[in-house]
Image 1: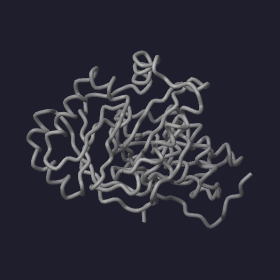
Image 2: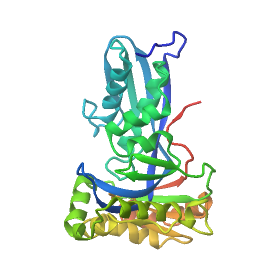
Image 3: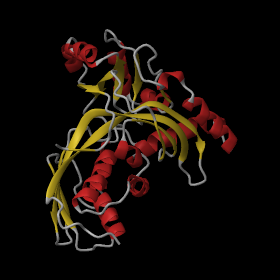
Amino acid sequence: MNKVSSSIAESLKVYASAKINLHLEVLGLRKDGFHELAMVMQSIDLVDEIEITKTNDELISLNSDNPELDNGDGNLIIKAAKLIRSRSGLRDLGALIYLRKKIPIGAGLAGGSSDGAATLVGLNSLWGLNFSNNQLEDMAAELGSDVPFCISGGAQLCFGRGECLEPLDKSDPTLAIVLVKDPSVSVSTPWAYSRYKQLNESTYLSKEIDFQEKRMALRKASWLRPLNASNPPPLINDLQEVVAPATPAVEKALQFLRSLKGVLSVAMSGSGPSCFAIFSDLDQARIALEENQEELRKQCLEGWCCALNSKGVRFAK
């Protein structure tokens, strides 16, 4: 059981960073039914804001500025809060949580996962529980495959179902992205993986030695160290090959991004439908987006310019 410090703050604010996939390979199936993956995930400076106030009434409640969100027990924020409280053994702990949602929902950007991660980090501090980062990541893995990455964020190799993490260089890369999404479209992650399996299961790897070879090849990729414009990420996403043909909004987004001046590479993030283009720096990305605002509106797309973040969850100053 963890003891709560008597000198901790009564409220705090944390920022939850969205992520993109710089690399996503589907290697095969695991014994637990999940897919074995080899990924590189990268935090970006599109963030949700979560304000948490400590209470001692055993109640954990969530409100949000987004009416589309379920604020009940199905929300990862609530799940994360109840999980860390149960691990603490302190049943009287409570919290009032308010979410300002800026990361698009169902967009392949791990918005929900990042919110869950931020809740774990925020409550660990607010409740004075003193769980280590590794302990928080273990809890995060129970909530979802992307949640452990979202705690520390930055640039990381992600293996297994996404929960086996190997951090990369912590330097701040100058690369930036233009991110676009049709706000009327979302993609089901389970559907995307199911469709990929349906079309590609015959080519799946099955032996651990083959998985290890794929992991090692990704570890040795020259574009990883460091991330820079002279050797930009080639951007591989296996799910794109099944999601894009079935989702006109993804094809539309990819075509728009490929037309931008100065673009280095283009891909879908996660299971979509968000897509992004890499630029050498934030100024280039901003210019490209600003010069194409009219076309963006014609295509009914929303767009953002984002720098790459070296951190995942962070506290407001």
